[in-house]
Length: 150
Image (cartoon, rainbow, N blue to C red; front, side):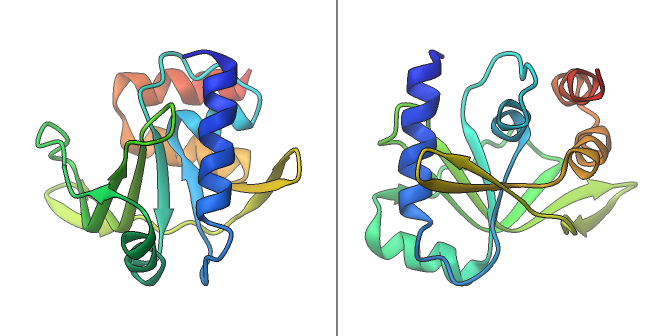
């Protein structure tokens, strides 16, 4: 993924989220990149948001609820994929992770604003993002957490 495609996708995301009523965050590889670390291969942008904001996005964007069944350790109450930007955006509301056989909602406590031009993007603070990636525990997440720690 070229840097310009990533920047275009982030600009589209920021514009789409401009009227959000609740806090939202970019997590995963997109957040790692926004923190200035190497995320490795990126296939999409993951966004945590409220059900209310996702419902509003469904009214204004061509979203589809095409979940990846291979991601069985994760579950969203409401989900949407936006394929128009150069990199697909996955919106997850009521996002949970299965830990020790139990579903636990992923709650973030920190929120850092990152400016791209005149647009606002939001990510967890670096230390919370590292903890989240370690909790996810997949090899790609562990690699991303390590690059943030360098």
